[in-house]
Length: 231
Image (tube, rainbow, N blue to C red; front, side, top):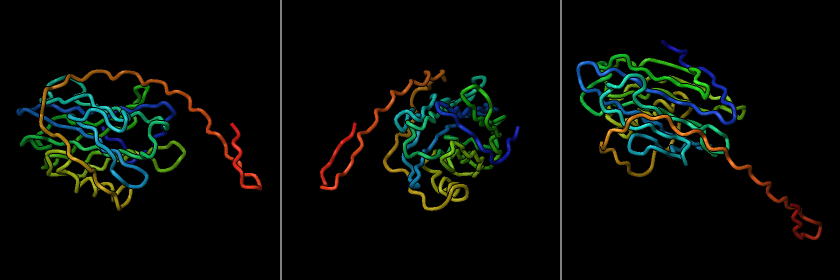
């Protein structure tokens, strides 16, 4: 079930990646929450997607909804990433956090897994949730190392005592420092972490084609300093 700890993923234009989280309920109600934090090339955490904020970064990230018991067969929670270059702008990576919002620890979880799927349904990477004596884990980082379109996937498996992604920020920084580099700025703003209605996981709508961008006018300077615009 283990994939290599780090693997290179080539994402084609128009690609989407689904990050699927599954777990068994065991003998206790098992409410795990997955979140994805986006970060920029300038090492700033720019936004987060989770059960109460189901889209982020202008829909680059979308969340399926909150599974509060782990009883449903198959995938319990899913985050979809729209990795088209036109949508990403300065975003160059995502870090994924899984937390238990109750007194259930990861060591109590049965058959927990995180799976990265490509647009065609192929498995890009997969790993079990570790059986830590902890309430959460900074599970993985997906980041772009260069301009070739290749993305690096690293399963970081950093345990955290936090019951949500905000409580886990010290471990998020630790995982980013080890995998990507130091000097990251944290998330800004307040986030509603209060539990609301359960949402049943549904298939997200297909990606909407982007309108082609018009060429910008070219500015040419004459010897006299006048501006000449060529359309």
